[in-house]
Image (cartoon, rainbow, N blue to C red; front, side, top):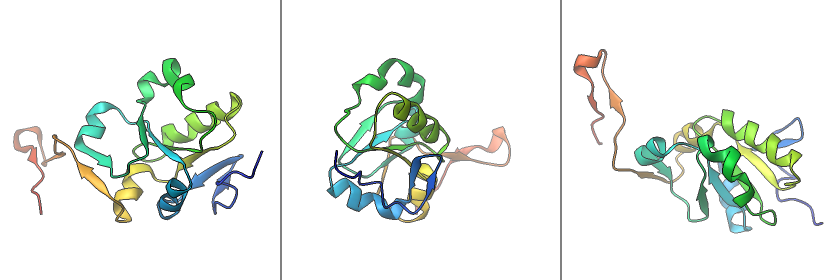
Length: 138
């Protein structure tokens, strides 16, 4: 088996590559797939602006993980990197050799200026429930 595209990742913890947002575009060009583990409500607020993406909400992961391709590098992503790390460890235990977790998830992806698609729902803000309103678009 050739070296994984994740071998050169800067952040490796417990045998799992934690891919930084800046490393993702090149990996996608090399054939990796981003697996978004966030729930539908989260993806309807904002989505990763990439073409090679699979949506597999973490609430459905236990029932659908086998639908993920074994022969493609998978970058698992969520909101901040918690579910993706657990899912990567699980997939490794099931024989998936080319898996990584997106360090910082959507939060760091967006903070670092990578493409995000605004969904039909907008995040809410306000100091108390009586004042909650959608964020103003800039």
